[in-house]
Amino acid sequence: MTNDPALLTATELLTRFRAGSLSPVEVTEAALARIEAHDTALNAFCLVDAEQALAEARRSEERWRIGAPKGRLDGVPASIKDLLLTKGWPTLRGSKALDPDQPWDEDAPAVARLREHGAVLLGKTTTPEFGWKGVTDSPLTGVTRNPWDPSRTPGGSSGGAAAAVATGMGALAIGTDGGGSIRIPAGFTGIFGLKPSFGRVPAYPLSPFGTVAHLGPMTRSVADAALMLTVLAEPDPRDWYALPVDGTDYTNGLEGGVEGLKIAFSPTLGGHRVDPEIAALVAAAAKRFAELGAVVE
Image (tube, rainbow, N blue to C red; front, top):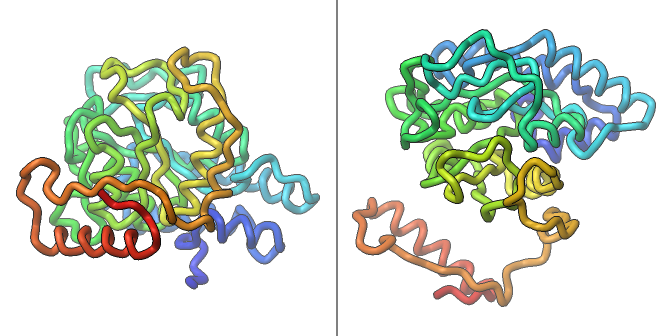
């Protein structure tokens, strides 16, 4: 286990906050230091608000000191993809066509849930123009690069979010996904990303891309994604497509195993060319799931 605060998972951070062995201020400072050190080369962020982040971290530190954390993510540094509304910050969606002097006066539902649960918002991450591309570059912010190899792309359209999480520039990020925009960058950068069912995470304003537009967590562990999804899935009356809230805590299923679960396995997704190394890794994973009792078809 690493002792670098910037590389700890949200679950690990919360354990240490609870024990008093680490503070949200220390963690936020570590994340901001990573941004300062690496983001000029990677271009994961289009907006960083260090002053606000540190102020939020100090308030979180005080809540932990008196034993009254605000919510399930209190003090955990996070970032927001620049397709989502953020109160007090502009939302430019990677485009020069939008007014840069237009900070919105409300948060998107997912952003509001993070604030309500005490997350420390570091800033906003890059996206291709209007999020409609599988690599992350735009006329507004330029090219975002993969932290494992800056000559390559982190994928898209949530490439800034993926690069940030992979580099320790925040433990959590919100991404969006229509045709792979969470899953592709997660795969390209070695993090965990989840595209939930449509409507599981309320959205506002609704995307012009309709029911293909989903919001989901991007994290460095499955446990963090389960925790983050539990928070993001809370209700919001502004989304009339949102699924009924059933109170599921996704962290409760982390230790339950996979016996009896049905898992679809498509080696080539209908005949597409797949790199042999990737094909072998996915086949090995499918075999392992079957050995653990899942029904792989």
